[in-house]
Image (cartoon, rainbow, N blue to C red; front, side, top):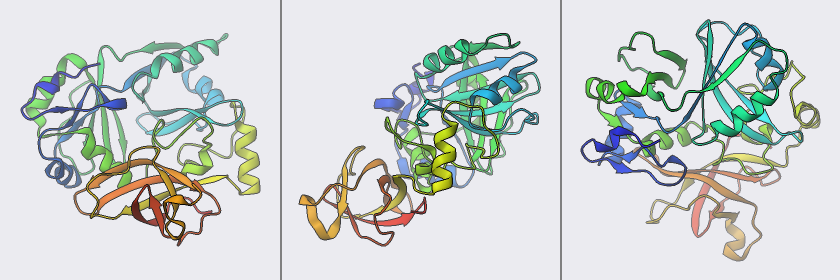
Amino acid sequence: MKSPLLSLPGAVPAEGRDEGVAAHYGDLFREQRALADGNGFVDLSHRGVVTVTGDDRLSWLHLLITQHVSDLAPHQATEALILSANGHIEHAMYLVDDGTTVWMHVEPDTQGELIAYLESMKFFYRVEVADRTGDIAVVHLPAGSIAEVPDGAAVRETPQGRDLFLPRADLEAYAAAHGPAAGILAYEALRVEGHRPRVGFETDHRTIPHELGWIGGAVHLQKGCYRGQETVARVHNLGKPPRRLVFLHLDGSEVHLPGHGTPVRLAADGQEGRQLGFITTSARHHELGPIALALVKRNVAVDAELLAGDTAAAQETVVEP
């Protein structure tokens, strides 16, 4: 989905997984500062939007996802995962129930695969699953924003801000009334600062929830019955996920940020040393400078100096080893 807000002055299109919205509108750091101060909004209209309606929507979802939602209160935001049979992360779903409908947004272009799985699990339950990406756009308001929410819009409120589910036809009018717009690079920099993982960035084909700190936030340990639950329980009881997420302060003298997949090694071993992990997301932060998230082997010492490619990196613990 290509956003109409790409026509705003200064808009530079994003690339890769975030293609379809603006990377920035001409001033990355100004946009970050605005969001940090509770001003403006972020166009997330490229993300997939899925709804579930019907009397059994919560009890049915409860059986399929990692989160406890059978008694989810109206307007209470949560997040959940869909796992493979081996416990590997396939989808992350950002949910809210408005009393009649479960609204969720997911990674761009993944809603079709998610809906196919959900449809295959309907059986006799009274539920209807719909792809609303074509007519509903997601807009993010930062924490502290006093912007009004249009009548009828579903709202998902978290400590990081509010996600609005707006009619796509109203997106340009909303932007005109509630600017300034901030690009996806500003949003991503604040996500990295907040140590929040993202499917397709912090995950690969074998990532399990424990490695990213998603236990508790997106995975409820007092429920079962979902696909991959055995792996979650086993790793939780043993306490030994094979990898762990770390936050990196990168050497600010380097011109280029290490991209996704850049090898991470011990600084003491140099660039010829054994690879211990990889960069998942890197960003330029308006206060912290170059920062990144990385997935490294569990036994990497928490105080070890690292190299991300040829860039020196000091780590902070996100997931305890």
